[in-house]
Image (cartoon, rainbow, N blue to C red):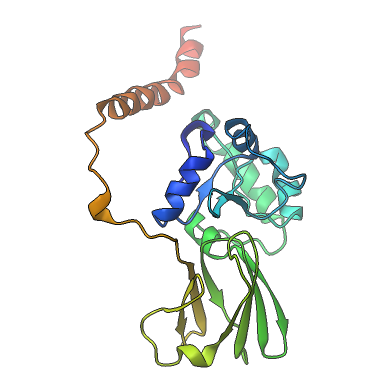
Length: 239
């Protein structure tokens, strides 16, 4: 979820966690602006994902000038743009892509893939230490790995030790603590999902009325956004 105009408050994050959203994408200034009452630690913005609500990961969007900084910090590179950047065709995007491609080990992927690869690991003998910075991750396990230990992070409340032997022959996810684990032995890939608690019941959620205003507002703003890029060329022909 990318919040319109960056308007993302903490209570949204709590609801999205229960509804199994994998994450949100909001710029750091917007987070600070819309959550002024929150106590922000001194290292806010330095983590590869900001935990909001009950541990929803928020990935930071930023302007092109900050690409080198966030690359140095090891963050996912999600560049903030706007429809006006398309006025001169795609030259701006080509420039930004060239900057990103100049960074070592660049891998282009979707926002969903960013969320599912937002973790880091440390290997020791046959054990793999995993630090989750997302609620749903897909881990390609190194060969000879037999045991894993998920270390405590804002997204995984407690240290959890796991043996791959516990998942051999299991088609359904194995729930250990607040993690649901599914091991594909053929590809040696482990899917990890943080289970929300408590799970909401669809029977207890009232169906809301049809909100006509958002549809009308979307139509008006899209008409404006499609018309604005034509204005400069129209003025140029007129002169």
